[in-house]
Image (cartoon, rainbow, N blue to C red):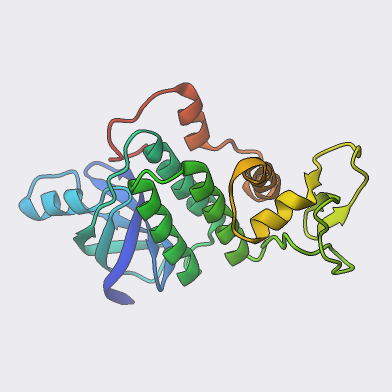
Length: 244
């Protein structure tokens, strides 16, 4: 039976399983996204209390597990680092966790995503500007998945985006020049060049949000994002524990 010892993982989601156990969704540096069953997690016992403290969303933990199938068995979980997300930052954390759960294939390692996620959590914990933080994470995730956006060049021709030009984004292709009054979602070249320079501010930030939604929508499908519905409802979650 395959066994892994002490691998660094982030806790993405925790939900009840059977009578006293729980399913833990984890993001590993070397093993990708996967699910462990934490047997007896909701039962008594000091060891389980330590696990419950460690297995909270946004925690970095050292995890040991075994199993050949899709569902692994948790053997140990040691807390390494917590990210204290509050208020709007907590909503943002739920959002990026849901993106990872919806978009990453199981057992497909992405060390770049792991590092980008770490950086994103650090920014959210420090109450950095939320919108630029999320947009950078979205585009880095898309790039890791093979859907990266080239902000500076046109599709097909590889012509450089012009500051005074207008462009539409075609999924699977890239930006194509269009007249300024073209119907649909149109982007100003100056905004795209600003994003290419990693400047997520002003009008370019608004353009980045619209573009990210356009590119993510086909990948996410028709199922609504629960984190977005939670934010729109105005219900402030008190803790990031044992999410349903």
